Each structure stands twice: as structure tokens, then as C-alpha cells.
Image (tube, rainbow, N blue to C red; front, side):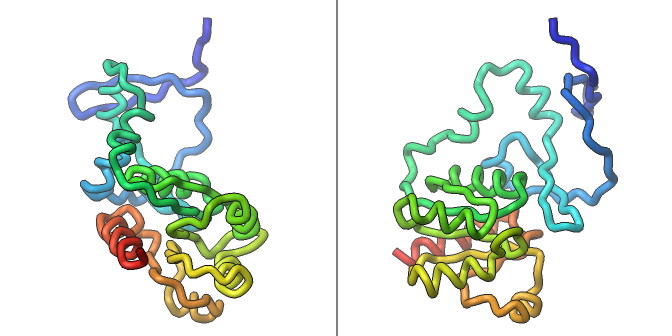
Length: 211
């Protein structure tokens, strides 16, 4: 019989409950930002997020949803992919070295009807591009190991000569991006605004305009 090493005590505001966990990696104090209603509908298990100094996004689980899941048989995957097949299929390549950030972006884009391809750095993204149909959109970070976003964007535009819409999601300011000689892209979104409704609205407009 499996006996968990730790239990995490949570509260819904009305009742307390405990869930078993494999390990407790760390404990930190952080500023929590609420997710917009639009994003919460898409990422149903989360209600907030925080940003590390490194720029990594940390999703915050909604304890009330966790409690509710105990009495539901519907899987999280089914909930996240609700109505997926009814939407128009576009494709997007998401290039981001922070796994949590990349997965959150992927879930959001899947809910918007996109087929999602992922890469953890620019070099890996180039390999992915060589093995998939040309995507409708590229979303990339700038600060990544091996091959950063600046060099990746340059390669896409100059070596591959592709006119794919490119969106940069970053913690860097416009001045810092200019210093790095970032090639012109279609949209730059601050990472702190990533979970806002405006993120989805801008993506929709961009893809629609490029069709």
C-alpha cells in the first residue's frame, strides 16, 4: 500500500483538506497576480500566477478547484480540451526554455484551437521547423540557452526566408531588445501581461490579419 511522505494542507475558505504529495521542493514568499477571467476559463485548475526574478512564470493552483476535482470523474485533460475539435485549426511553434511557462502558453493556445509544437531553445526550434508543416505563428522567448531568441528570429527571417508571424514574450524592455539588435517582429508582449485577456486578443488579430 502506498503511503505518501507528505501531505499538503489547503483551504477553500470554507473547509480545510489535505492532499498527498511526492515531495516538497521549496517554499517561497512571492507576489501573486490574478489571472484574467478569460485565461481562468482556459486554465481551469489555476487562478493566479507569479513571476520569478529570472522571468519564469509560476502558475498558482486554485484550491477550490482541487477540492471539487475530488468528487468529479471528468479528467483535467478533458476539461482543458473542451470544444477543441469544434474550432478552426491553426498551428503554433512555442519556443521557451522555462518548462512551466511553455506549458502554460501551450495550454492557452490549444484552447484557442491551435495545434501546438514546442521547443526549449532556438536550435531545437530550427530542428522542429524542419520536420513540421510551416506553422501559422511562432511565439518565442528571447533569453534562452544554446541559441537565443534574437538569433532564432534572425535565422527564421534571413536563412529560412519565412514570413511567419512572430510574437516575442519577454521580460526585457524595448530598449534592451533594441540593444540586442532584434529583427523586426509582429508583436512584443511583456511576460507580465502574458496571462491577460489582451494576449489572446492580440494573437487572434495577428493571425487573422496574416491570412
